[in-house]
Length: 168
Image 1: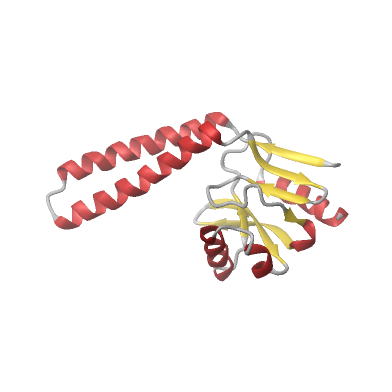
Image 2 (image 1 turned 90 degrees about the horizontal axis):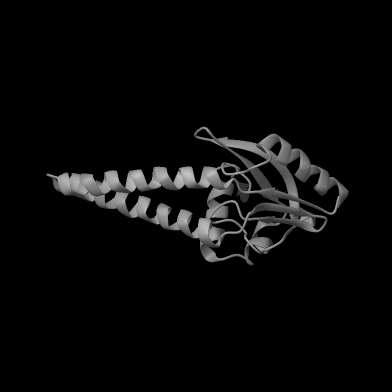
């Protein structure tokens, strides 16, 4: 057991892109129909939000590779979200525990670090801040979203990751 890879499910990502484009068009329509300042502000905020989501999804589809999670004997790489650790290896020796988590009906794998501050200094500031917010809400510093996976669910990934963790 040297390596285990979780792959992206392209058709799920395309579905998310289509939904994002629909929301973007609805926001643009709302912008043209805004008859109050409040409606205009809401439309602009929604347009910026869904525009950013669309850009992130397109970028991930075009340049994002097929790998979502890569588990190795040394640690793991997380490419699951725009704010994940990407090419920074998370060593197993830095991991305290791994568990399933849920927020607002969204399921994910939550990874708690032994010394978060020491590890997080390697990551970009935005990723560090998000990790700190996650921890303040009671979740692990690293949260892996499996919404666009091809071959695994949260329970299976937690079990696989804990196997790698125990063997390290």
